[in-house]
Image (cartoon, rainbow, N blue to C red; front, side, top):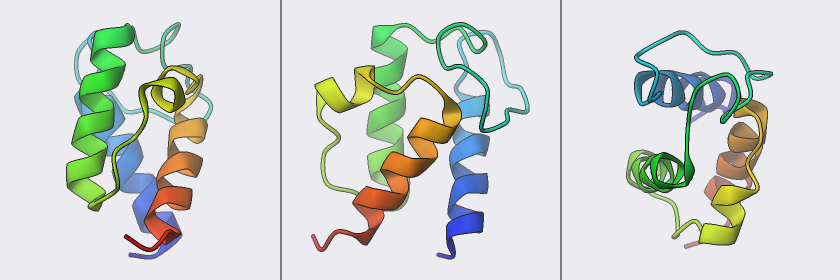
Amino acid sequence: MPEDQQAERVRELVGAMSPLGARTVTSSDRVVDDLGYDSVAILELALALEVEFDLQAIAEDQAVDLLTVGDIEQLVGQLARKPA
């Protein structure tokens, strides 16, 4: 999947799973402050991303370091490029 499509799909998933209700998100949106994610919701999102993009497991310490949607896009891009 091309990186721009991948980033768009990440934004769609993050927006759809927002604890504040489905919304359109941008790369600069803050996961906790703008979208209402807490630690449990972030881990649920990490699992959904693993399934959606067929990624290796996202470590809990990686997941809690994701501050913006752009951070999530970067992480997914990095993990998607790594061989399984």
